[in-house]
Image 1 (cartoon, rainbow, N blue to C red):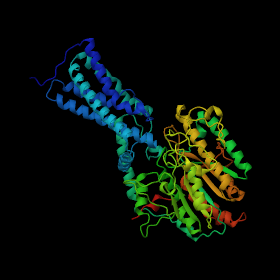
Image 2: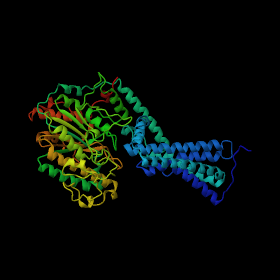
Image 3: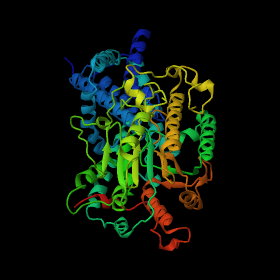
Image 4: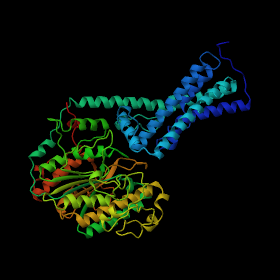
Length: 594
């Protein structure tokens, strides 16, 4: 048998059609994740340059001793391309950033535990379907590669392949780089050092470089100087200690104000909310707050909020968690400051519960933690936390806050507005205890346009069945419900003079967003607690505007401490003697033990 490849000058129309069809199928496979997710498509779509190279290798290895090796290698190469694109699409969908393998491996075990915890007949069936789909793709790839070998010997087919190369390489080597085509690789790069992603290969190379940079950065923190600014807060003493609420609304993002389809509904909602609170004696101010994450990983947002350090990397958070509580490595944080000032610190996190591989830990040393198991909830399940937020908030107030002899600090991480917004809205009951008397969940899709208290949305939005509405409107309705729950609680139960900080933990997943900002609202019935932030440029009321200042979340720790100290010392206090603001927080070396 000859080991030299040979070609025929022409092939039948059917032969050429088979060749083009097989090539098109193989070309499409790595692009499937981008077609089914928000992952940005490359500038050469629908051409996959890597598949072009692999198909060429298979064609010219045909009828030689390298034929089988080329087919197997091409099959493995296409499989690797598809797996990488699927991984990149999963990361982008969840976190709105590109893949960083060094960090993303940290989530692998968590994902495994999540699947185990969520195991059901439906999940098991989905896994079996996924395995069947994977087997089908292997079979399809094998058949297509065999077809390529069989038909690629004809000159017409090879001419088409040559035309593909003549089209592809000027795009890849000249036009793409000169015009800076392609979406930016969204990792932890500066805007001046951002890589443009044009092919799967360039994406993988950018992934490796980002991973190496991240590892080098974390290693450098071990020897970096530690900023001791927050440690000096131990010398402060407050005589006036208003009750403090820090409430993070799940997925409450600036997209509500920035997206035209939501803005026209969100702004009237906030005007009505503002009017209701103002009539009850509340003063309000608003700004934009840039958080370190998008679409998820709220624990990084919370860590940034409490420590005054920008925690935008899971590995940095892991190091902080590992060193926290170790003698000699205690990290100063907001909860620690308030505890030293005599506050009773309470964390209400209804979704938190212990799972295999994911133990529960009171990382910030709250005096009292209220997790799922602590809520004494016996009613039907309403979403991820089982208990709806109305029940959780009022239960916590009744049991831990209403009778507290000390001023309290409540951190509340809401759950009702958690994606995917497909559970249906819980009702708002006259008495929160009635949830425990229910035997079946009374969720929307039943119209709640006439519900009381109102959600401040028009009937045209609240009357339709929520499951039939697009994702963006389901999201808006969940946020509106969450704001109703908080509005009614604050007007009914919050002690006079309370200071309330209300902000999102991150922009929502599933909706495309341009940045990572969330609304930040400061509220109090004591004007003296709101006026200082107004003087810093916060806009009056609850509406975001072009004039609303842009704050980094890591600045909120020093901002809150400064606000409380200024309130304690009175309006005549010398502002130069107040704790300094840290607009970008302090170095992350604070969180890393030696």
